[in-house]
Length: 383
Image (cartoon, rainbow, N blue to C red; front, side):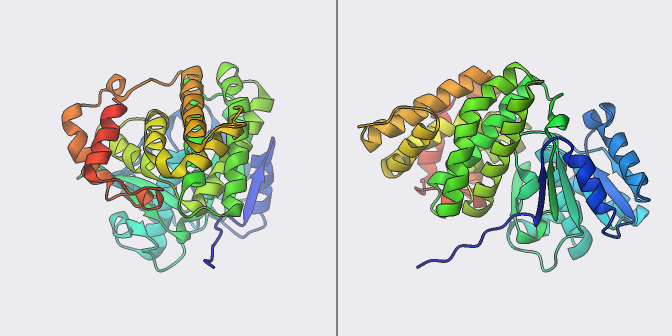
């Protein structure tokens, strides 16, 4: 019998008022100076300043690093690390979605292990735990606040490096749906489809187990029920709250079952063209699952049922087809583009993208290991 290890932060705070509760808990932990890693839009919204003031009430200083790009880069990590060292920070707090979380993980990992973030590409390459990291989420999709995954774009090669390391798991995740109300519709849709991709890929993964299965299927159900509502009305707090739970569950699933070729391929599109990760995932998801359906038909039928589809009496092949149809319909309802051509992707780049995708650690647990020709064909089908 094989063994399974389940990773997630030791403390996870979720619900309205979660930020205030998290700051109160931090006040009792002895930290003196935090580096808040975020982006300019969240500074402009006032979220970073509010957090800085909340920490100050407990005599915790905070410096703000707001240079994180949509696809965080090696240069972002280096710049944030320089500020952390200059200010003598003993805590890192990421504020935002996957981009600030991943950048903060890179900063915190190098701060305690030394070297360059490129040294840690791959699985469990670090020797020591990172500097303590608290991840405060403002989107409902990436689940980076609960995972041991860190995705950083190498500015020299334009390749997204997948760093999968138990030492980048935050010590606390914070999901406060009040911070998610101001997400624009496009971001709500993209991050929601990202969460769906996490859940589906974790469920069909070769490393899936009963715990990850339970988390993944519940996440799919919640997303099918609440994503369209959250996109339609950002102030629908029931939908925001349920999507926060959904993305957290999906993160718990893929953090332990890993992912598949949707992410392996989407990473290349994001790194090469600087495209939004969730949109790339949403476009690729039905095409990769169609490829997987010959061996994962039964599992995809389960996903179809979680998406609210009637699968009674269907064969595995029919159930998988029903699942793929439901995924496409949900993406259309959320306003996701139908193909890669609309994102400016070029067919002549498919072979390069495919070669890089086959080196991505996320593809190792895909239910079928595709050939180079298979990956090129999937890119073409998604075009």
